[in-house]
Length: 570
Ligand code: ATP
Image (cartoon, rainbow, N blue to C red; front, side):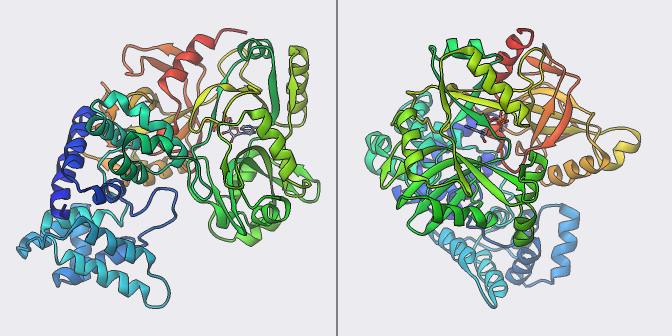
């Protein structure tokens, strides 16, 4: 398939505001694709040249892309910049210049374009900036205006096609399994391998049977298992048939640890590679893990080396940075509380019961210098469970996580096999909600200076892969935070409602659903206005969650419904 052909589909996707039509366009696209193109199309649709978890970036920001455009069309950089100022989209600037020059498409194959972009991403060392500029320019000079517009947006991370992973899976299911509702058949494997391109490749090559055989592998993150919530010990024990495995709940950030011989890699809750940030945990793994290959699930926490106290989330989170790592490592060294194991010495453990996994965990981690294994405790008495919960609070922790002892590790699942009991979850609504920013509404007066008066936010409908509105938030943000919203949301601004957003309200500006914020509210009420069917009363922003959660990790409509029915139970 040619890149020219692919961009025709990009054009259609870009202007669609219905998710069902997105699925139709995508399945049509994949029906035209060669088997060998499928994986590359999956990555390009999301503006990437590798699966999300691979830290392969094209490494060209606006400045260098501007230089490529100037070079490709033989104009001065200043002209490109002034046009950019006028039009607000470098892709459009490239298209205008190519059209002026009447550039025709050379009908490059998708694989040619993909390979060049991958080569650009892999250029390192001296003179690489110039080399990247030249390579992108040469691609641009072989494309039509329409192709150029989409090509330029890829390195800028601004593809704006509004296509989420579940929507691509729907398209796969519709095309290959006859019905989009069969997405569930692909989802289990997707949760284990986190790579849509791989799912596509195997589905085309070996069919559904091949997909079902895909399993967890060291070096490739699996989606984290998540928790449900309940409000008291008694109900939890009833729900888990009288016996639970209890571990403390640490409030830091999740680190999925992969060890393959002497190579160690970490992935965050949203599957981003975080290895370079935590060198002390790499050391800990190499020192303490007595297995050749392993995948562990853990929560990392910073502690004060003087007082030896663990620090709150606000401190720990300072370690999520890409610079001054050594300095921060001294100030805020990390320890990782290891609470699960999903793979050992070449064997997947996701289908092994938790009880056995905990035994393996204890056997293969030596000592507790940096990695601290969490053997937990088996409890059948609710008073004992309550006591452990209170102990955790006394230690300044958030609460406990209770798990079903014979349960599998279900990648990506959120169900009652894991239940959290948190400090605030009893009584009135105190747990926070993760909302996605869908738009902003211009304010009046002082706030208008920052371009926002209220945020239109939503929650996620996992089955339909759609975002439904749940609230307008105007309080809790400092002027500084409004500026941050403005800065981040401006890059995601779109002219029309994104296809996956369902809303009857129209904000001043629509925003591609990407930014997640944590919100606290007094109450959840039934709402005739918000498409989630519920609204938040007195909502206020607690913090930005953007770095560890993707939009699809936001609170779901189902959870809101559950929280609504639980809020007055004690
Ligand atoms: P979620 O991850 O469920 O979407 P969240 O990010 O708001 O929600 P919490 O509600 O605070 O997180 O609880 C779940 C998180 O607690 C896990 O994702 C994990 O990072 C952390 N955690 C801490 N201790 C444990 C433990 N012993 N077992 C499992 N998870 C734990």
